[in-house]
Image 1: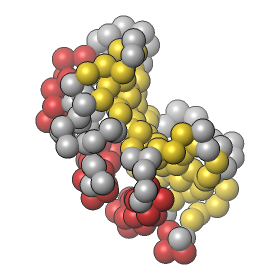
Image 2: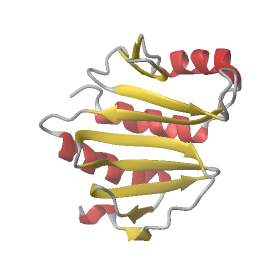
Image 3: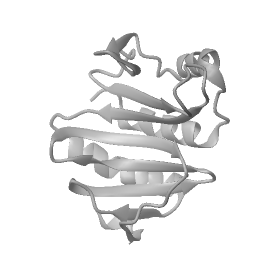
Length: 158
């Protein structure tokens, strides 16, 4: 399974806790330093990419504050796996991220639940959709609360 779930766990913790870059040049350098720099664009979307070394078919996406290419980074996300073993990897991610980031909150999702961890001013979101077999993992600046937040999840109960 590429990337290895442990690689994604370590990367998620780093991205959630590190100082984020300012502007496009710093973003590119940061992505390269963290090993998540795409080598090709996905379609005509300038903020989507693939071809990340050692990541298999995973895709990355990111958002900026505003439309300017040099605007500050607001979020980064990945679409991961989608083959046999994906649900086991999801369980591993939930358990290990809970161990490293603290209790998760759970909210309803399209297909299966989403989990959230609040890390300072950032939110780590993990879930998926019945329309896409891949796991989605996003790290975003906390700006709005999700109305569907339910209760703390005991990741050991998975």
